[in-house]
Image (cartoon, rainbow, N blue to C red; front, top):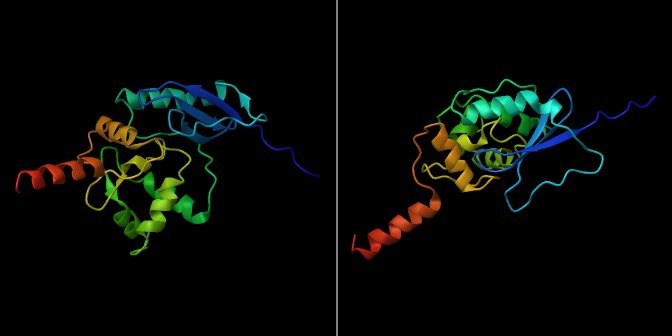
Length: 183
C-alpha cells in the first residue's frame, strides 16, 4: 500500500531583510526563501497557502530580528545529501554574533582541504537565517556569496553584532583608493 505524501504548506511574511517565503509540513519547517532576490520562489500548485503551521517560526523570526533570540528552536526538515546535512548541522553550532571561514568549518568537519565542498553545501542551505549560513565568511574576513545577497548577509551579521571586515567589493574599492594615492 502506498502512503499519501504529506501536505506541504507555505506562507510569505515581511521581515527587516525583505519578504521571506516559509515552506514545510505541519510538523517541521523545510525552507526559508528570500523573495526579494533575483529568483523568487513560486510555490507549486500542490502546496497549500496557510500561515498556521508557521506560527512558531514566525514568532521566533520576529524575536530574532528584535534582538531577543539567539538560537532557533524549531523542528526542521531540510532535504539534502548526508554531507549537506552534516554541514548544515555544523552551521547551527556557530554561535550568534560569531563568524568562521569556509576553511575553518571544513576543518571542524574533519575535511582539511574541503573548503570548496563546504561552500557548495553552505550555498545549498534551504533554511537560511534559521540554519545560520550567513555566519560563514571568506578566509580573509570578506563577506562572500549568500543566496539572499551580500546586503542581507551584512544586515544579518550586523544585527548579531559580528565583528566582520569588509566585503570583496569594499576591499577592491579600498585597494583602488590606496593605489591612486601613491600608497
